[in-house]
Length: 140
Image (cartoon, rainbow, N blue to C red; front, side):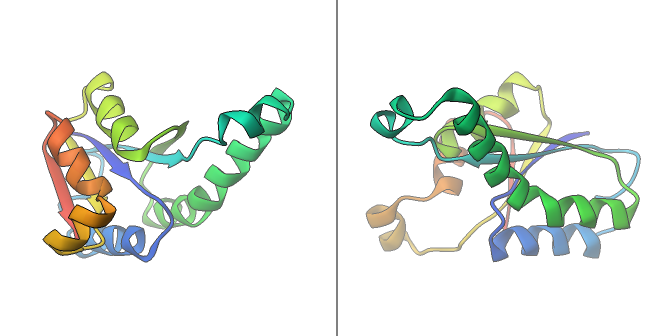
């Protein structure tokens, strides 16, 4: 099974990884993991005055901050994984990558906000659920 694991470095990412550890059926050679983090884009006016190499380096550094502990987790588990970062709006990018990569499942941690909080603040997980045709496993 091709599994896209959306991560952001938050405690909710740690919960998702703990879920993987607690359920042996998820870790192993039967699954192919792609770990995805989405770095928010620098505002266009700011990006216009920064050279492309510096901007690219910034995006890579931000992604690596998220990936570093997750790489260690997968290495400790002995599970191979692909690490990918994209720039943009998280929900849009997650849904698009899942469809484009023909993933069988999106796995992601959820903050667990109530309906009122989602209405006011929005929710990446709610938007992914609405946009994606790929099944989503939310871990709280």
